[in-house]
Length: 244
Length: 244
Image 1 (cartoon, rainbow over the protein chains, first blue to last red):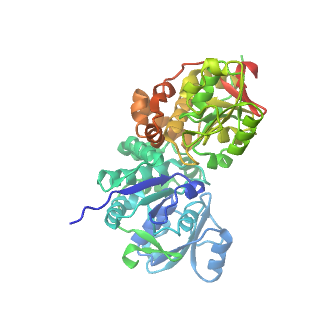
Image 2: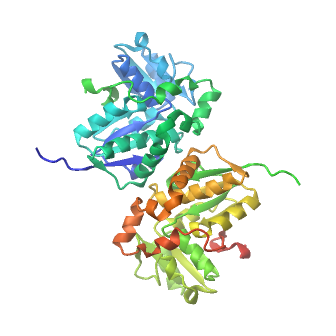
Image 3: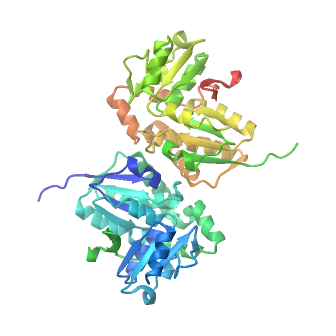
């Protein structure tokens, strides 16, 4: 058996930096832990057929006009025309199984669209961490973790997830990095991992959600490996890797 | 005596993110540890009168044509028309005392120019860490640390310095933060501080310098508090705070 070449993992801390990390031969893993990519994993775990990520509010409204089920929020608030918002708990089996849902959020869905030129694009979250890492090791491609951030600012929880993934991949011996952001993210993860929810108490967005009474999702969002789904972008839709 | 209001410290990990952290009432501290802001501190410590930071190579060449002493490098290499490059050891007392020097580097001088709309702009480095923190506490302004990075990518050493400064300011009780990047930078500093040079072995730029045989500066660049100078931007020139 041929020895697999060591692949490269890099971490991009903001969509506004994506041009400087872009590698169209890589798999881009989008990280928006609170809450878009966690909710996307929940939706597939609960049997959604596909998700159409859209950037703009107007575009989301147009899809609604065409009769689609639409999940859409801005700054944590459900948009008035939408069927529901961004909590992973909204994507219940009775609501989503077998359906196509249009999905638009403050940061995460734009980041997914931005990466669409890459070899593959996947949604990553703590909830699918090990399954995702297993697939990334198998494919033998370089990996770029694109942190969705908060309005182009650095976000702690997205970066700690990037570090958890980097740690798994580098720890497997199949990946290495010379990317300072990947090194830093991994350090943050190593500090955070023994008490992830406690650590993320420090994060700004956690406080934004608390103010809005939306912090019931924290336990779910920070518990690794509750699902094996790997949502991937196929054309303009997210599908399960099993349908890719 | 009136109690001073708690001020805010934020950290911007890349010049390409500056628009999202911009606060024109703040003091912007530019961090380019390897090597621009460390070299700027060395120059003032050795008696330079002022430094003119310039972004472009052509502009630096024009200043040379007008008879100025020019320090200029790109990617760690001294430009052919320049008198010397970017090592802090180049800014020797016999060369710089009482002089005006034009200075252009890959990342740092552009970051200084970019911040020129702020209330004050200062050059920060480990070598002037405590002096700088003391001044920032006295002025009672918000602080934004602008990490020069590497061609708009995140840089470990610039960010660890930002964390060291954040730690000093927050530890003083005069500053607080809700900025995730400041929280992360501080965490990196707390992990790094017991063996700073060993930690920065992980940084990509440290390897770039090693390849070029320019890593003799590491001891100097990572030893805190060798000087009390605070270089600040006055018009288009860096001057010592004592001449501001």
